[in-house]
Image (cartoon, one colour):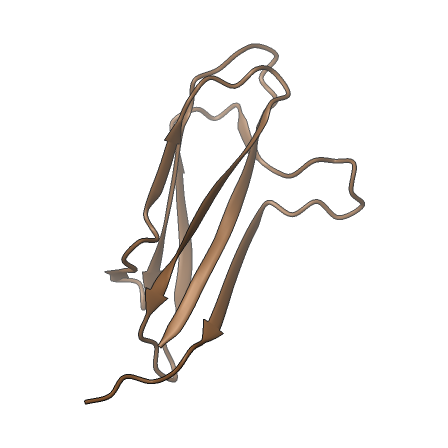
Length: 104
């Protein structure tokens, strides 16, 4: 059993106010959506405005499993980026922590 979590950073660099829909989810092995990983945000962002979409939950993983972050946005003027004040801005984070094993 693993706990997972993370965040996605996005910024409006369009030159005007926007109201984007930003969504994300995690997939195990390309087919199974991880419960509680599905998140969405829709709101007005000022030009240059930044927001963060976070998620967390638990999942049973075994050796060989893959976990992929999938994202969706309905406005191509929104960038996945973090504040450029840092030398190495991070657009997204995914962490996994082994918390134990399932008992049959």
